[in-house]
Amino acid sequence: MPTAKMDSAVPGAPVWRMECRVLGNSGAVSLDVAVASDSRVRVTDTTQVSVLNNMLIMHPHSSNAPTMALLVPLPRNLTLSQQPTIALSHSPSKTIVSLSAKTTPSTNESIHPTTTSFMDADALAHTRALHCHACHASLTPEFVAPLAAKDLPSEHWHELIDCWACHNEDYSHLQKGHFGTVIPARQRVLLVAPTYLVVHESDLLMDAITVNPVEASLDTQTHGNQDHTHAHDHSNTRNAFKPTQWSLVTCSNCLSALGDALAWEGSGSSDSTGSNAKYIAIKLYKHCLDTFILQHKPIQPASEAPPPLKILHRPYTAFLVHNLLEAANSHASYKFSLTTGNSQHPSMLLWLLNWNLQYTVSSSDTAPAREGCFLHRAVKVGFIDCTQPLSDAEQDAVLAWDADKSVERMQVEKAFLGQIVSALVDSNDAIVGDGNLKRVNAFRVGYFVADWESEE
Image 1 (cartoon, one colour):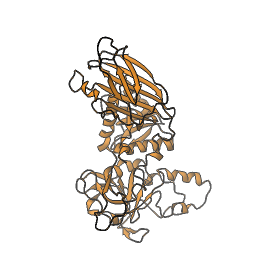
Image 2 (tube, rainbow, N blue to C red; image 1 turned 45 degrees about the horizontal axis):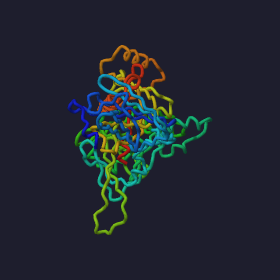
Image 3 (cartoon, rainbow, N blue to C red; image 1 turned 120 degrees about the horizontal axis):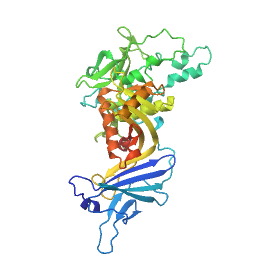
Image 4 (cartoon, rainbow, N blue to C red; image 1 turned 90 degrees about the vertical axis):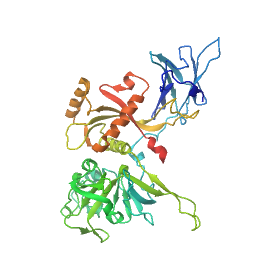
């Protein structure tokens, strides 16, 4: 690859860095390439810049001697629908080549609650086992026959009952088999929510998990269709069930948090199948699990080895994105104050800026030879990390948001706050341009990039 020879004079520094943003509603393409001033290929106002075969070509103009071109592979899934406009800007350390163009607008490429339900019931229809992601300990026996999988309703399904209940009537049939808004676990069935699974205790190795006599994980306290604290009871079974508090579930082997459990009052009760179940529901969060899925293969003779298992796992940030967009879609909330533990002071402010775009970054150190990277769906946010010393402008923003009733408070798991901070700070550092591209008022700009989708 030609760019491999064009290393910067500074050891370890990339020759170029590329950032590409595509707006889904308009198809507008913004691509910036920063070329180090001390690289072997000098980019000046006389440099000939063109796009050919999905490659950005920068060819220094020289009439005296042969020159070496700098080739920057564009994203492989980017197709320009018009000739790009190219502009150059210079600073002592770098030259930025900015490309503006159009691509075909996409109507289904934005990240949305309905499109972030990865690991849904269809994907989990052939689950053979669940393991702790932290230590890989088995949480279930390996199922001889895969469990059935069924999607749970929307996270805010119970809020619709207020729309249906326009007069005094018995609506108990709408919640048949439920306890408030708690949908009980079912034997041999995985109940699949966007961010967690509800598993019956008979399908778990109960010695592999520990139900702690402490309050549940923070996700259960703030949202979820298993959250009884937000119940709207319009049934005639109002007094038939008195929910106890959700309790934290941890891995018995490594003590990592796995989810939450809701126990029957007393020593236990018969569930809908007649079994003497101790727990109404056990929730296991997907980001805490390795889910082993049977891969489909043509029917093989009995003597051949069984088809291999595929492991599904998504990072915590993937499910945080879903929760943010679910809140935005349901409550028109675009400003979020993230807290951890029992603290009322925010650990981070998040401001949803755009969730209908595609995004990628790459550099001469990472891009495959002549191949380029891929655009991924992304969410653009403004953020303030409140765990670090704040500037005066940031402090003013924190105070203003604290008094703003439109800001939605959301608790997050303290153990995963570092993942959120790291993802956003890294994406801010990777932004090629300066000024408004990196900041919006007191907020730094960052991206949650759905690069986990490439693992499907």
